[in-house]
Image (tube, rainbow, N blue to C red; front, side):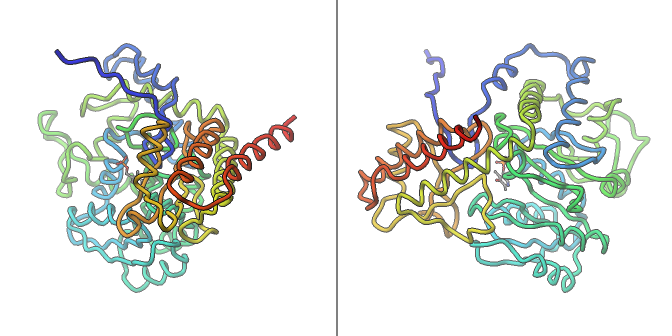
Length: 408
Ligand SMILES: *Cc1c(COP(=O)(O)O)cnc(C)c1O
């Protein structure tokens, strides 16, 4: 006989997935209703409105795509790309290459703009590359999870809009942790996910797009065979499941038949967004920022340094250089095995060189951070790193105590 699954308690301080809000998990155990049940349609229409708030948009279109964040990224890119279209991808980290991977499969002509991963681009560098390569689409990452760097977008977005290009931005790692301004930055399609700062299990992707994209989708819409052949398009999108033109209608007040919505996930998403919005976006962002400062200052007190340019780091992931002589994987596995705390390693050229500490959503809370820092100091000492033991965790404690005193 198989035993019932019984998962150990974890403190997850990685850049995703992070701990789910307990209230989200409770919502996800509610009863199933039909996907076109009027009660469910009300939940969907609230979710649509709530998704827009952390994105900073007044777009009409915002909804969830079933599948993890990359499902939304793929849906966005294949909605715009026709074979042979030029896409410029400025890459300052690992996830830009995921955009490229998707564009390649969509048979786009990809123009890469590549650099070291230690900092994002100067916006004018990207604008120069656009002038030179004349793409139809510019696709970028707002916050690069692999190296903890964050790209400014406003000037690039403005240039794209003036020149009628499409600007697609992956905001998976920053949504719900950093102030986003999709409208002000002239982003045409923005994508996020659930398992990062929204503190909902992975499985849904969040997307918003403007009227320019709605127009493209209207031309590419084709009614699903079996529902009728009265609406056909020569330019139909080459995926059924990720066809934004159908998904848009599925999420409209008069939904068409498409997939069977993952109702339980939508209950969870509703609660995750609701809790975040009720906390107040300004407060949510300030909490991430303060906890990030505590982490950064406290790790520095442990005689540790960070990867990359300090001025362009994003507050949701902290990349720490693994000190010489310390076995990075042994530190990570000891933290997990003995303390139940998970931190991440990195990818590509940073593999084995940096640890990444996530500061996201429900995981970004004082008790987690104090626990992580205390445990980390002990493990780091045990694995031979030379520093003033206690300095980091005491500093963190003092920072929180001072903050509490100020709040009184
Ligand atoms: C996590 C992440 C993704 C991929 O997300 P999945 O939900 O695993 O598909 C894409 N882009 C960025 C920037 C990420 O941080």
